[in-house]
Length: 183
Image (tube, rainbow, N blue to C red; front, side):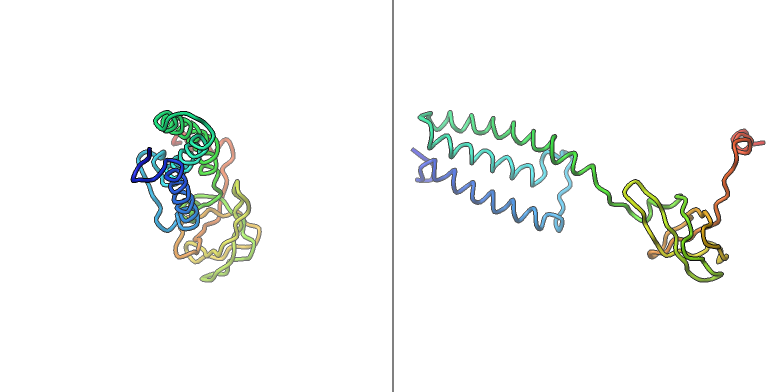
């Protein structure tokens, strides 16, 4: 017995081939149409992995065991759900949170070092050390002031790929206490 006039083994194989092809397309072109959901378990990669696991297990069980098709379907759905959860929590979730990407706007307020002196009304270069490495960017004085090499600066504003910076003056411990108390 089967569905749509096809034996179940053949149906499982067609579903497996289609899900595998869609998974490859999603991996290569998934960033173009990024799917944001309130429930991350319903992303296309997770759903396609579930269908792929389920159809592969179903195909193998149909060809290798004597279970009836409803038992095979139930076992393959449960096994696919278990494998999909393992995939999501052990691989996809850690990889997605381990990104090293940054946005230029997120660097506002960071302290940087001037590597190329910034002339009055001109551009120089600053180096920012982050957890993911060293970033080197074009910089200009926030009030068009000149800033020497090896000066510490704070990034005040980011506009069109240029960091607008001011000289950074660190407060010593006593000054921080006075500042915090408002004295």
